[in-house]
Every structure is written in structure tokens, then in C-alpha cells.
Amino acid sequence: MGPANVDFVIMFFIATAVMLLLAFSIIFFVVFYQKRILSEQLKRKLLEAEYQQKMLQAALESQEKERSRLASDLHDSVGAMLSTIRLTLHPVVKAGNGQPLDHTKQLLDETIETVRRISRDLLPSGLEKFGLTYSVQEMCDRINSSGIIEVKFSETGNPIAMDKKREVLVYRIIQEMVNNAIRHSKASMLKIQMEWGNTLHLVIQDNGEGFDFEGFKNNTAASKAGLGLYSIETRVSLLGASLGYDTVFPKGSQFTVKIPTAA
Amino acid sequence: MTTNEFLHFSNYFQWVGSFTILLFSAYFYKSSPREIRLLGAYGLNSVLFQLIQSNYKILGLHPNAVGNTYVFTEVFLLLLLYYWMLRSKLIKRIVVVAFVLFVVFFAFNVLNDFTHHSGPVRAARDGLLIFFSVMYFFQLLKQRAQHNLFDSPMFWSNTAILIYFSCTFMLSLFSNYIVKVLLDDFSIFWSFRNFLRTGFCILICFGIWTGRKSYPYLSKNTISRIL
Image (cartoon, rainbow over the protein chains, first blue to last red):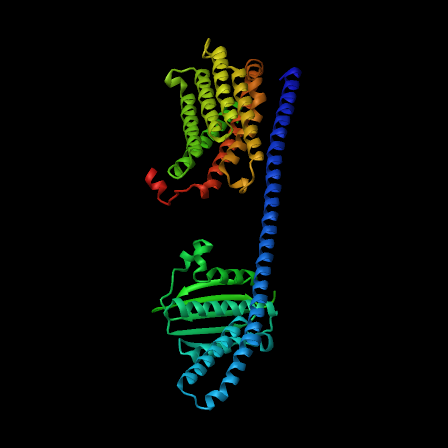
């Protein structure tokens, strides 16, 4: 190979190297630019999710406050007024003016009891004072005494005191699931199990008809509202918990919620 | 190993590369989009032309005539690929115009003597494909990123096209000079190109393989249905 040809070969390789360098520069630029866009999109999505989480939390907190106000009003105003009416009616009944008044008193007693029950459902006062276990136990006792369904409650492990807001969320999840079982599953027995550990393992099992959980999961929010599943999912997500569903042999369904005890 | 043996060896490599593209696209044929199928057609085209070129004496053909025809079919297939990949109507029109101009340029350079090795035609091919691969990357930049680029088979195919044709551009441009002046050393340059082409084929196969999750109708029995 002559010197002119050597020069050509060198020039050829330099020119090819420059072309290759340009090609790689374009490829790397595209890759890094796309990666940057993807990471920005991810950040924006995370921010949106965080914002939505905060909005949900605020909505649920305001709902709890409203429930609390309504429960106080019912208990302190309507309940007190009904009790006063009952007291004022007592001497008249005692005077023995006939059966219609007895019936009125009975109706009044039922109304007072209904107001108390609604008030208790709206604000589980035991939750604030005695904690989650006590409130759930109280709820189970109340349902058992009504005779609608048999509820068995069990607890294992050492209960961990959670933040009150989180306890309210857990209580509402249990309440919603119990209501679902009573209203929709046609179950005769319900088991509520709480296992305390690093996470609170909550299992709610019934012997009812069960339902298509996956179908519900894939459906829209509006269709979930019917079974209160949307509100359960919302609370589960606010707790950073996970929700599972299984069918139980021979019949029934089982919800499992794993809740981190610390926020 | 003599330079001619080395050239022969590299030829074998690039043939295997093209055959691998054909195999990969055949494997995913039923489930893959038309772009992957076209890459398969490109692989088949390369395999056939490389077979013809290896046996040109038996077939009574001139190797340059086979090479020129291959360049034409290669430009047609790869420009069709860009016609499908590029979404802008304006760029699609540019692809069509570029192909028409290439046909005119090809006719002007080669048709007088079809056995003549035309460097400018090959350089034009490389230039066109570099231009449209850059256009495709420009399109990717304009699009909002929705998925990882590395999962897209077209990203890898386009990368392969840009790298390979950028490397061969100078070789194509000066190929007339190399053939006439460097004589025996020509085979070293062509071996370099053949190994580059093998890399190009591997990159395309890698793209087809990484994009397999996005092919909607993939089934395990695809290969048995094809073979």
C-alpha cells in the first residue's frame, strides 16, 4: 500500500469514526432525553397520587367530623328531648289513662333506642376512650343482641395502639364489611379475626353467597359504590394496607386486610 | 488466513446474521406488527441475494448486477419500513419523494451498465437511511414518552440502521476508488463492512426479541405452526 493509499485509509477511518460518533451522539441524546421525560412523568404521577391521597384523607376526616357533630346533636339534643318527653309522660301513664298512652311510651322507648343506636354507629365513642378492640367487640355484641346474624370475634397477639385517625379508618372498614355481610350476603354467621403483629391482620369471613370480587375490582367506581367497596378500598389505600378476597368452601367469602400498625 | 479467506469468512457471518433476522421474525410472525414482518422480509431478501451472490458463477450472473439489484430492494424495503414507522404525513410524503428521487438516481447511475459497481448509489442509499433514522429519533423526541425505549423493537432496529449505515457511508462513497485503486485491500474494507452488518443483524434480532411482550397474539405454539 503506497503512502497516498495509507493517507486515504487513515482519512477513511477518521471520517467513519466521526460518522459513528455522530450516530452514537444522536442515540444517546434520544435515550437520555426520553429517560428524563419518563422520570419527570413519574414524578408528576407520584405528586398527583400524593395529592389525591391528601384530598381523600381530608374528605374522610371531614366526613368523620360531620358524623361526630351529627352523633352529638342526636345524642345531646334529640335524645335528651325524647328522654324529657318520656319523663313528662310517665306520670300520665302511671295515672292509668288507658292503653293508647302505653303504646305511645313503647314507641318513645323504641325511638330513644334508635336514636342511641344511630348515634353510636355514627361515632363509636368507645374507640376514643378504650381503643379499636373494645369498639369492635362492642359492635359485635350489639349485632349479636339484635339477633340478625351471629358474629364471632377473636383476637390474637398484643394489640398495638395506633394513631386514632388510623383506628377510625380500620373501624370503618370493619363496619362496612359487616354491613355488607348483613345486607347482601345472606349469611347466618360472621367471623371477625384480628391478629396483631408487625401488621394488623384482619380477617372477616362469612358463610353467605359470596360475590365476584375480581369483577368488582375491574368495574367502575360507581358500580363499586353499591357494596361500599369503593369506600373500603379508599380507606385501605389511605392506611397503606392491602385488601384480599377469597371464597370459602363450601360457601361464603373472606376478606383479608393487612394493615401496617405505624403510619 | 488470506484476506480473501477472511472476506469469505465475514460473508458467511453476515449471511448467518440475515438468516437470524428471518428466523426471529418468522418465530413472532403471527403475533407481530407489520414492521416486524417487513424486517423478516428484509432478512429473507438479504439471505436470498447473499445466496445468489455466492453462486453467481453457477447462475451466470454478474456479482455487481446482483449487488445493484440488492441495493434497490434494500432501499425499497427500508423506506417502506420508515413510511410505516413515521407518523407525520409530511415526512411520509418526503419518504415517497426520496424513493422516487432514488429510483431516478439509480436509473441514471446504473441502468446504462448494470454490471458497473456504483458507489454513489450506495452512498445515496446510506444517506437516505441515515436521514430517515434521524427523523424517526426526532419523532420519538416529539412524542410524550409512555414506555421504556429499550422495550421497543423499532428503537433497536432504528439504532441498528443508524449505526450501520453511518459506518458504511464513507465506504460506499469511496467504494469506486477502493475497488479501482486499493485492489486487493478492497477485501479488508468489505470484511469490515460484513462484520458491521452482522452486528446490525444482531441488533435487529435483539429488538425483535425485546419487543416480544408487546406482540399481542403470541402463543407458545407459534414456532410449531410455522415450521
